Image (tube, rainbow, N blue to C red; front, side, top):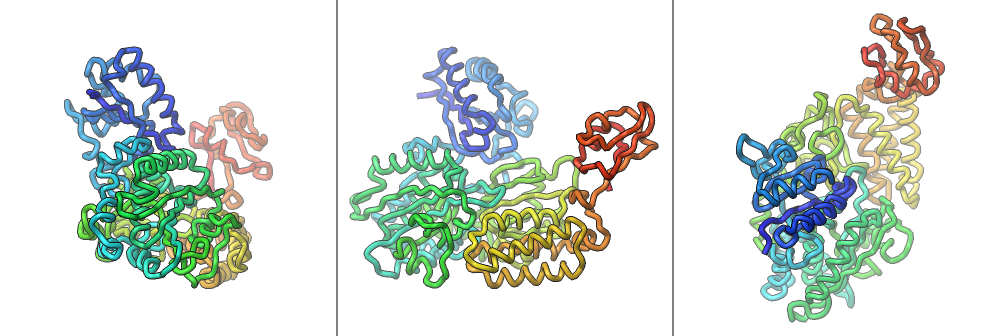
Length: 595
């Protein structure tokens, strides 16, 4: 029996900030103090507040130590774990209130969240099946196999209102029912963990922090649809997730929770991991299945849909990680538990990866219908450095952008569709006044062009033509006719591409044209980038009245474009200037002018 538990984030974010070294140092220090049998160290999944990593939480006090360094470990062990004196100067500021330590759930980042998919992340050891079982793990599977028929399971999922969290928002129970009604000698369940959107890390964090909930949900799906095999398609760039999945599958088999005759019910189900090579198009369900089969990851025409002819030409049910992560709680607590949260047509919660120009970068789970303002200002802590919020990009390369004028929009499937955006898998990138929206659209087109599989002409050729037009605009060489052509081409590609990648590739362009057309006009007509981002439309000069002649800028300029005598105003040779901005960063007197 341990008197204290120290939870250290072992997710990718904190691991990249050396949390593994902190864990090793902590265990060594505890042993040196003779506390190894009194204090247990647990490496968990993501706590969510990635901006403050590495994170360490000490229970039973619930003290939240943030931005922990290896050199802080001896002090925490000596003062807190040995002498019982909390090291307040290392705590997350918001948890310190006079003489009290506030619980984490009362901080601004957490108090508006409601965790279902992330309920165990940062709470349990993901490599220990006993800790998952202690949190009601595998009880939902037992309930299905011993108390419910397959049709009853599907009906509960339908009644819950759960919609696919991978981006499309298709009703999950309805998808399961399509597979269930098709007879075949073999059926499959596929978990899409090929999370490829720039800035998205929701599914990865669930697999790293609570892999058993996905295994349990896939087995439930297998029972409901008549499948006996499942595949998790996860990208190889997620080594921690892959490692923990493999451990979880091994443990589930050893405990009779995967394999033959689960719970003596006569139901057989096993799960296998398949690694993806990082192709974004393999996030599309038919391309993903083609890749699992050992072929080049390219989409297939639909119909036939996977429920009829999917993996290995057999009926297949495919859902993403977050969708599956909700299933055990729906089965355990009932459909009404889940449908009572969120909005009428978008039930439950949604996980977002909050990134970009935001103070509290991290992973959040909020009820559907939460406004963008609440997510950015209350949970996210607002935009740093006093800058103004400009837009939020949702859905990554497949999504659109929500402008500041619509910051009070409740986030759900229908509201986002109504303003020309989409939920996507859950990436939410915040942008401020220093972002150029034309440049943002070009960034996502660059990504889509690189990731197109090339199978269909509208996507293969059309996205390249769109990128070329955007380059003309950001180079100051475009005309208004080019802008009309860009919009026409976007609609053509959207309507004629084979799969979701091509059909949604124009979305960032169409959304920025809808809400920020004035920026496109400024680039084309005025030959200016209002945000000062597009290099070919930016020039640097020196204000002679402010220049002190300190020569700092001249010494830092990589191409020798700045000249002038000491203590005399300097000047910039625009023919040499490469517009790197080093001079502006160097000047302490605000003499460099960017326009």
